[in-house]
Image 1 (cartoon, one colour):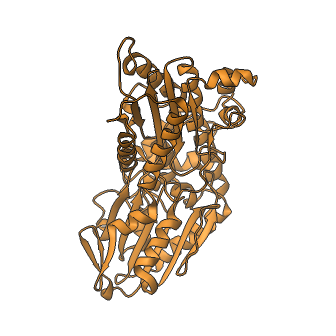
Image 2: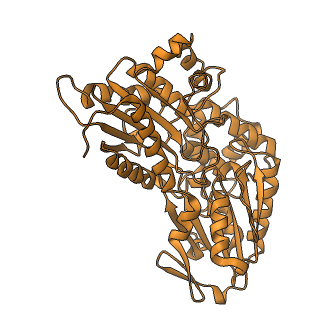
Length: 454
């Protein structure tokens, strides 16, 4: 452990290196190759063999921000064994594919391209027979990228519902609970469509706890939520008068038992369905920790399940909480300590109150920058592993204990920008935005605090 003095420029560079190390460990295509290989006529996924010579057709379908990277790897593994393939990806998140068709669509709010692509994905699944293998590739973003409304709900109604859920600050678990109950493809319905074919789903997790039925709204997974849970969500966020009438009517019908529930664990369909998680936020955190150790920091993975700390997962509130912890306990006065790295994972939420531009990571860093202003040498970085933070081109932001002072020189009032949810425009003139472009992965966010004494 190198406990030498770290200057603030080096610490900022170190924070970026630590983030990039976490990112590199969870590139979706690399993870597919790590878990999947060909052995003779078999596809080996971890320790399970799929007998390809007995498969009449092999179909590859799926969706997500990093699905293109997964599809590329699957093409390199299976080659011309692939009969047909189709995936939906976010605009700009493409690669060149030979056997699998790629379709760009809207995220986080679904669009017509996503709808048309979801219909093609569903059609491929429905045409599969008992002698076929359906490989489904899912990463974060797949819920929005595979919109397929249930009977009686228009596509516009699903768009409006998505907008209201995003604006109110609902968690991904809460958002997907409603998505599953108004969809013809989520909540296990894709598995139903593909039955009796064998279904193998490879999953890159973007949710806290890695709950299979929450990731991508569980299109090939038994659903643990029920219609009554949907009511709890829209009551919690006072959405009863905002959600479209067709959505409210379907959710009520479900609670009354007038329409069937989503597929549950004991449904016989799932005997031929295999869901495999190939990458998680914890994998990224482990790689980030190893990099921090190598750079001479005492590295601590404080939490990947951030909501266990405190009573909220609101981005700014958690930034205040962790900044206070660092001030009071990590750098106590009168003690000589090694440079320290505090790592956090998971995903926060933002309740939109202002009219600014930003995302949960940028807002976290802005709130933290206010809290650590004038302290010992501290650097804070927060960024999304998918390269996207809110409706911006930034993945997140980086700041230090001098950021607020620098902002004041430029006439920027940090508190006003935070109150207006305008973190992007605060950090842009400071050149403190982190812009990565498409990253070919999505395992939630990484937050990094680096602390060193003078």
